[in-house]
Length: 150
Length: 254
Image 1 (tube, one colour):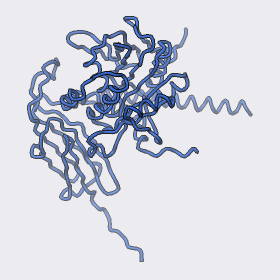
Image 2: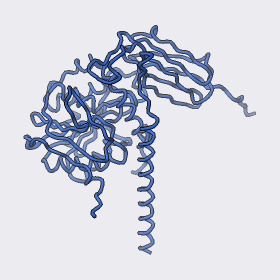
Image 3: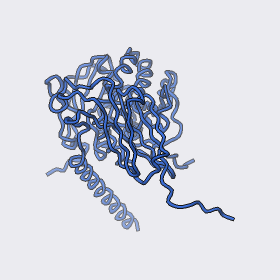
Image 4: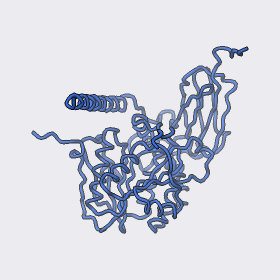
């Protein structure tokens, strides 16, 4: 009986070790093949870090926009399935001490098109900007009607 | 042929001998809001410690840092006035975090470290509304926790830790090392110099240092721009290790 338990324990360990290896391989593949640079030299723009969360009835998007001084410097365009963020940087950013691609253009704005996870009510979106963080709250499109129980 | 375990594939190389007899070792690995790394980099800029070694492994991504034309290892060890700082400029792959930290804890014991201090962040969903992030402490012994509380930290009473903090604390308990995690309320996926400033304020009191918080906050935006790539890769690693569990309530075990 004891031996049986040991075998199951060994199998469990083997499975988790194989899973770890697969995770590691997928992690490497994803990192090497899908990571794009966070800047565009031709357009002189930086891509902001962005987070997208979903609640039951809202999609919440936040973006990190350092060196953007005011909400007046931000343009937002929203469609049913995507959100476009463009924000002017207070003073153009240069990376003079960095070589390669980063060095050349002064970067003048942040730009990113964010894919939304579901269709939204674009007209009802609300945006807030505080300490260089932009937060956009967008209600999800209602797909049905609430049924009142009698 | 001997097959090496993962911990045996990680080497701590001391290029200069450690001077301190009972050092405080600060371990800063990329994690929530890069708070630990930003705090450590500010300490390095302010204290100007000397590089005494590096950590190498074939398990790490093949990256070398070039600074002012000099070649630097991505995980370096610094020392000054009894303070040792281990800082990584690369995200540590999820499968390597445990053996790396286990190796560091064993090395800290070998060097008779008085304390392993792990600065970092704890993700706060309402961080946008917080002007002065609080710092929470978890320690392997009550005395160390008392010291952290005396200098302004709150106790982290209930919750789940995932990642470097979790492993560093568990390994330290297992091996009998005095360890303290300091975690400031932070953005999860954005570099957070404001949270790092809260950590520095407590470190200044605990270690009797005078690291400028104002200087750190003055260049906060520049730090946020420059650390975007490291943050993005760290976010990928955190997602894989299930960092979102830190938002969850702990299981009942009483």
